[in-house]
Length: 399
Image 1: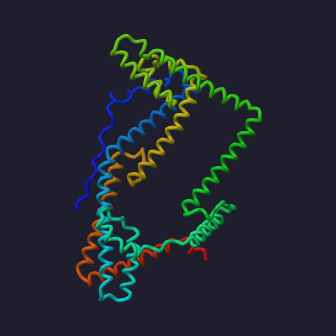
Image 2 (image 1 turned 120 degrees about the horizontal axis):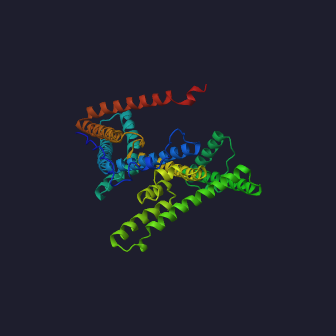
Image 3 (image 1 turned 180 degrees about the horizontal axis):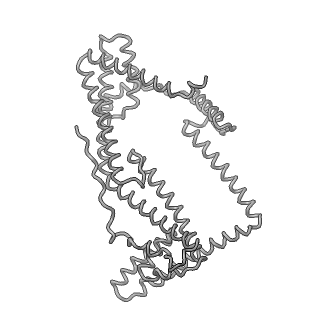
């Protein structure tokens, strides 16, 4: 059976749908004559390019993921259903064979161990008839429920191990009320967050009581200048684009659309988008950008620096979310074809797993002799797996 190859993502939106390609180039401060750019100008240009690059990475990654997501997830779902069906069919066959004669005691033990591993891992059937057929296996091979005493002992042991690992004294109020290791970790995480928040509040109180240093005063003034600069650009655009001041219906509709972009950009503190809009309505040009003084550029650079931080976080979150969703490592800086190739490889691996399980099922159904050979293979694979784990177990090198 062949694996469907993901179609490479189509090209990103055309230039007519995206911001003008030369907008950033026109916003950069250009050197004139023999005069080199000063540090404030170089920083402004560098941050401008950084924001633009991050925006393009976000847009390109989202575009590639949107083009590949649906067919990939559909294919993976089909393969997972094949695997689940093969798991359940194998478990049902082994269980039924155990009820008959002709198997040695070691073979029966091996089959029961396989079933104890297989049944909990297999997804439940969706149909009522399938669930009825599956219930005897759940009753026979699921591990017995953990008693309250075992649960408490396990959580105490886990807490003790965490204390030894971190070297900290960890105490969890109402530990007996915690139901699972996940809840214990969540309780410890909440404690740590509360501790850090309390420490941050104490530091903030101490800073508030201290007189600001000259450096802090300068930073506060720059923050205020940056906010003022953003408000000033927004007000200029709002004054020029206010739709209520336009008599022509078509022009009013155009300004209304632009004003919506202005409001959205201002809401998220997107200086580059506001500057692009100023270019579009001819409120700024290359000459006006070049005339900006160092103080003004410093304020705009501070806004751009904040925007870099926001975009860096958005990009990291998008990469992590897509990696989890698609099952492969997703990086915005990779060529879009790399993502399509990685998804194809993952599908091929899943296809191989599904085909292997279906082949195994067909083998064990052929005859008892084939079943015995398969059991010997599984025992050999289990021994090899255990040997590999032992070789990589750090505790084995502690002697």
